[in-house]
Structure formats: structure tokens, C-alpha cells
Image (cartoon, rainbow, N blue to C red; front, side, top):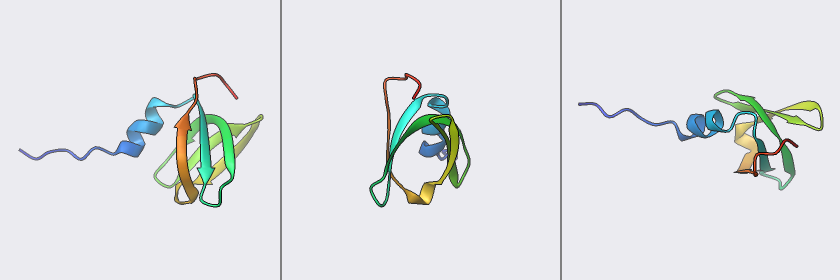
Length: 70
């Protein structure tokens, strides 16, 4: 029986859609926003009413806050 590979990024992002996340870019910039979408290469956040598209390759760390909107 072939074991299916789990895509941990996909699971994490799908579980946390519309939640507030805090991320740090590779150069240390902190960004807090509501997770609105994602694909293989990017993450879409809503930050202070504006949409920001970030490339996953530039993200260092992600955390989920208590669930309140930013």
C-alpha cells in the first residue's frame, strides 16, 4: 500500500484561512494580517484593509494569533 504524502503547508494554511497570523520575512520585517488565500508559491494577507501578496520563499516564520481580526 502506497502512503500518501502530507503537505503540511497546505494543511496549515487551509486550517487558518480568515484567521490573524503574524509572519516574519527573511529580512526581519513583522507583518500581521488576516490570511485570505494561498497557493503553491504565495500567501495573500489583508493588512489594515489592504491586500498584500507575499512569496512563501521570503517568509521566515509564521504564527497564528488568538483568532481576532487584525
